[in-house]
Each structure stands twice: as C-alpha cells, then as structure tokens.
Image 1 (cartoon, rainbow, N blue to C red):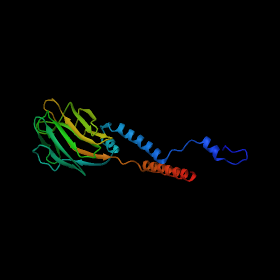
Image 2: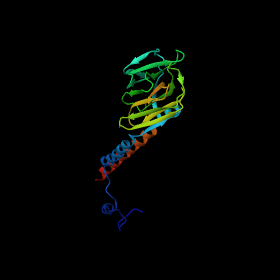
Image 3: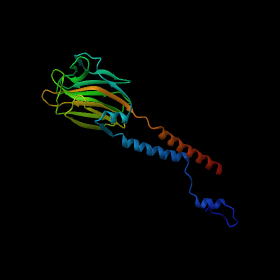
Image 4: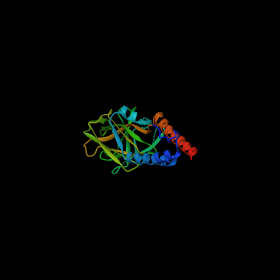
Amino acid sequence: MRPASASGTLRSSSWSSILRPIPSAAAVAATIASALLLCAGSAQAEITTFTNQASYLAAVGNTGVDNYNDLIQQMYFDQIPRQAGDYAYSVSAGPKAPAIWAGTSDYVDFWLTSQNRTDTTTFALQDGVAGAGGNFFGSDTYSHPTAAASLLLTATDSTGATVSFTLENPDVHSFVGFVSSANLVSLTVTAGQQPGVWSSIDNFHVSVAAVPEPGTYAMLLAGLGMLGWTARRRGKGA
C-alpha cells in the first residue's frame, strides 16, 4: 500500500522519508563495469585442456587448420612461418637441433617432427588467438608413426599462466587442444628421453574465442536501457 497523507493526497515529504536515494546511471554503470572487469581478470588465468576434437571446436570460434601437405620431406631450419586458415603462427625446435623435419609415410600426408628426438617443438601464436591444438603422436627415425609411451604438451597464455598435459599412448588420431580465456601465446610438445621416439604433430588447429550468444548482448542492452530510463525519470522529478 502506498503511503498517503491524512487528507488522502500523497505528500512529497512522505516519499522523501521512505524512498532511498536512487543512484545515478553513471554510478550503476561503473559498478557493473567494475564487476565485469573483476570477473574477466579472474578468468584470464584459466586454460582448459581438451582431448576430443569435437569438444574443442565447440568451445572456440573460427578455426584454421594447417595440415602441412604443402611441405616436402626435408629439414626446415630456425623459426618457420606458417598459416592456419586466417591465423599466422611460427614453429621451431630446440635446443639441440634448431630444425624441423617434414615427415611422411606415403608422400601425400605430411606432418612435423623435431630433428632431434629429445628436443621441444614450439608453436608461437599470433595475437588474438584463444585456442590451439592438433593430432600429436610419436614417429621413428624414418619419420613413420610409431608407438610412444607419452608426450608432454604445455600451453601458455598472455597472463603467464601455463598448463601441462601428458598424452599417454598417443597415435595419429590422438587430439589435444588448449583454450584460454585470455590470449594463448604458445604451445610446446616433447617426447623427452624415450628411445627411438620423436614428437610429431599434424593438422594444427588455431582458433579465436567463441562469439557470445546474441542473448548476452540483448540482456546487456536491456539493462543499459533501464538505467537510462531510470535516469530520465529521476531528472523529471527533480
């Protein structure tokens, strides 16, 4: 029930004693912005690991894939510039042998492998990339796929957060992908000290972040519209 005076008419003094001051639209917007920034900051250090390609693709936006079938079987030295769809990256290996070998078993399907079996292969990603992954497996001295006990993969994002994952008993179909709520800056893989095993990679995926659902934008716009309406009503009553 609304408060009324004894004469039945509403007095402004009654409202002023009951209603709390309405915060300005700017103040409310600032509070919302601060909360969003706080949430974003806490999420920046999160890197999620996927071992299923479909699940990875569902978690990211547009994705480019580099299948390496433009290469020939030879060594490629230093940092090699590559392109996965619309997204640039580079790949290198070290520290013992700064070279990448293009491996194949049929001269049709090619993949990358480090020249030295104990070296680490590093994929350096362009700005604005949220995810990366691919098919990781072991290969032998002839660059043919071979059994491996495990491979160690590590992803790093722009906040400095890192996540490592041990892929056990990989084969040519084994998929691993990483998605960061910040920008993903690098991914590495190594076979370590396993005799006769080189870490290998095919179908390298590079992805941007998923676009928020339209409903998210609609809710934000509706909230901002309500703030504007409140501010106008308050201004008219002043």
